[in-house]
Each structure stands twice: as structure tokens, then as C-alpha cells.
Amino acid sequence: MEPFKYHIFVCTQAKPEGMESCAAKGAEQTLAALRREIARAGLDSEVQVTTCGCLGLCEKGPNLIVYPEGTWYAQVKAEDVAGIVSEHLKLGRPVARLARPDASSMKKEISEHFAKVKAIKEFLEKSGLVPEEVNAVMRGFMESRIMLTAVELDLFSAIGVGATAAQAAKTVKAHPRSTEAVLNALVALKLLTKNGEVFYNTPLTARYLVAGGSDDSRLALMHMVHLWRRWSTLTAAVREGTAVAKEALKKRGKDQTAAFIAAMHKNASFAAKAVVPAIDLGGVGSLLDVGGGSGAYAIAFARKKPGMKVTVFDLPGVIPLTKKYIAAADLADAIRTQAGDMTKDKLGAGYDLVFVSAICHMFSPKENLALFKRIKSALNPGGRVVIQDFVLDNAKTSPRMAAVFALNMLVNTKGGGTYSGEEYLDWLEQAGFAEGKIQPLPGPTRLAIGKKS
Figure 1 (cartoon, rainbow, N blue to C red):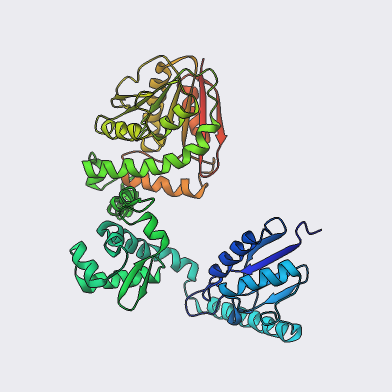
Figure 2: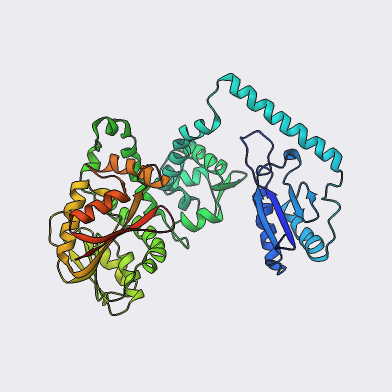
């Protein structure tokens, strides 16, 4: 039984460059226009739109099918969508000029297409060529490096509302020839557009990567730029079992600290919307955020429970940045700060809840156990520790991001990594916590919770 009056399937499958596909012919723009026009017509509750894989008519894409009639539409451009919505979806009249009424010839085309695809796959399998999905992963660093270089040079800001390669090169103090090559590649990656010799930002890059953009994130993304050299030492780090990059073992400089805290603030401000509501603050009169960085979580806790005493504990070099973020949130009177080193200094005392987010992956198992013991000393009887971090399944192969992040810690720390739920519960028990549990969250992180007896 169909719960909607109409159900539309839109092919958005992308294929390797040079091959016909709906994606290459503008399927995403068609899909966006379809959703926009359906909403504008007030048909959201009557029409369901679902993306799908290849429909077998790639040369005539973008393709879509409207059920329950099973009307096939071909070569549907974004500008064609309004007609389909007004005629077919509102009045029940299929648009003849776009519909494919010839079922027999259409079936023949589809059959021939899939036979051709099968033959190509069999040929590639017999050839012994490395599959495209493997090659794509292997060369993924190339596109990543283009993006990192553009962010590092601040090329998107240099493009602004439009600039030639020569103008952008002059702004960022780079060579015109190489700058043009990078800009052309960014167009190929759909991060810029080009008209004649002039390059333009897309709505996405204008929003996030241009200085003064509505969600300017360049400073935060510079943290990824700083990780590049360390990741290039992964092979050596695997051999040695620890970070080998000299800069990874040094304290961050001012610029790197600011970029790191900006990146963490961006991520934590978003994650806090899911994490903080998942934590029961009933009976909590005082809360300590260990390694709180920008104070993003402390800000969210203070807003959730006004009047609660909230403290952010972090390194002396971080606390001045913390104060700026807290002041910007207009919570300077509600959140206090405490400077110190969590690996050796006392955290204080008299807290009902200690929150630890994105910290444990930086430490070795021995260091985490020692931290948990210091946290217990800071808690009131019956107080809780809540740890938010990547938590692997017991096989340590998922979530995917958590498994990959273990290597980020390998190249960046002496003994850090990502750990399983079993390991967190074991540390909590050894540190003297009771009622240990792992609480799921949306995304790759989890909560590990323990109660002081």
C-alpha cells in the first residue's frame, strides 16, 4: 500500500568521468528543483521523492519515474521540473514532451545498456587492472591536498566576488601559472566556477571559506592543514609504534593552538546539541569540564541549567582563548576557568559531575586510568564522570571514523588511540567507579559513564 499519492524515483548515480550518467547531466540540480517546487506547491505530504541508482537510460538522463502510474521521464532539466509538478503532480496529467511512452523500445535500450555494463565489468575483471574503487582511495590525497593548499593560501578569499588567476596569485603572493592550475582544479572539484578567465566562489565556498563569510571556517580548517605533514609520517609511525614527527611531540605554537581550538569549537558547538541533552543534570549543582578548550560544552551546559556552577579546566595557553569564547556567548559570569595540566595537577574538588570530551584519545591506557583516578578525587560522593569520545566496538573495526582516527592519534601523540567500550568500562572499574555503562549517541562517538561510590 502506497502511503503517498505519488512516489518519484530520481537517478543520481555518478559514474567515472567520460561515461554517460544522470549525475553528469545535472541530476542533482534536477533533484533540488523537484524538491523545491514540490514544497512551493504545498505537496510535501502527498509526494515522496527518493534517489536511486542507474535506471539504464544514461544517455538520456537525468531520468526519473513517477509512481503509481510508472511514468518514465527522460532528459529532465531543472527548468522542466515546474511543469511536471504543476501538470502531473497537481492535475494528474503527465507531461508528454518529457515522458517516454515507448515501453518496448525503452526496455530494449535498458537491456542493451546493462548487457554492455556487464561486458565491461567482465573485461576489467579479466584484465587484472586495479579496480577503480581501490584507485579512488589511493589517490584521494591528491584532491585533499588541493583543498588544503587553497585553504592554506586563503585562495577562496582572494577570489572574493570574482578574480582572474593573475589577480588571485598577486593577492596570495604566489606564481600565476601554478595558481591558475590550482584554481582550474578547484573548478573541476566543483568548489569554484569559471567564466572566461574569471573565477568565482560557489555558494558553499563563499559561505565557509571566504573571510567574512556567514560561516567563515578557515581558521578551524587550518587545523587540518597542520595535520598534513604528520600524516605523511604514518609509515614510520607504524614501524616505531608512536609519533615520529618532531612537531607532533612539541607543544603547539600560538597559531596552531588558535586553529586547533577554533576547529574544536566548531565541532563541539554542533555536537553539544546532541550530547548535552543526553546527559541528566538532575541533582547536579556543580560541573567540571576537563580539557574544555573553547568552552563550547560548558556554554551548552550553562544554558541548559542556569544557576549551575560550571568550570572549564585547561592548559594555561588555552584558557585566554576559552575566556574569549565564553565572553562572546555572554556567559562570563556563569562559567569560571581554571588553568592547569590534567595529566599531573589536581582538578579541584566538590563537583557533582565531571565531563571529559575528546580527551581520552590523546592518552595511553595508563594515562587514562590515572586521569580517571584524579577525576574521582574531584567528585562528591555519588557524583558522575561522563566521557564523550570515539568508542570502538569490541573488535575495534567500527565505527569507521573511530577506527581511522586511531591512526590520527598514532601520528600525533606518544601513546594515544581510540579505545573500545570494554576498555573504558575496565578503566572506570579500576579507578573505583561503579555502575559503568556505554551510552550510544548519534554519530561515531559514545558516552562512557561511571558513578563514584
